[in-house]
Length: 148
Ligand code: RB5
Image (cartoon, rainbow, N blue to C red):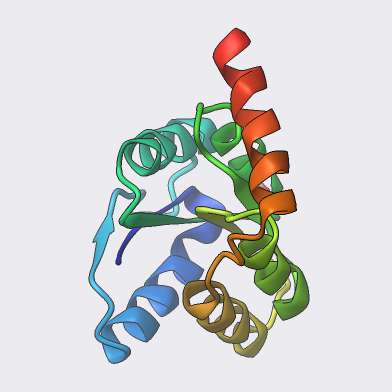
């Protein structure tokens, strides 16, 4: 598994800390920006990452903005992406088990790094349950996306 990571200006500091964490865990990643605190628009970064994730099942996306919500909303517009804005390890974990989430949206502002670390750790290491009812529900989302 490889991670594609990006942030807007509000998430750039946290993105650097996350990259150090991934490095420490020997998890391969690609950083698609942004690289400074100059103001940028989060959809540009969310969509860039989401399009890569939609094309390759071996990739996971991590997106950081001020709240994690804007990035998640934008990423979920890309067909095949199931992005979760996780503020706690439980929702990160269940988004893998039940929803097979492939993008994680994180909050860069007013949020302790220790919590971020736990969320990422559990999100990267929890497999999708593969249970029929969950596959059926995910398929309904995919069917809807195909019809649009
Ligand atoms: C940027 O100020 C902020 O709106 C953005 O980082 C994010 O929180 C949007 O959801």
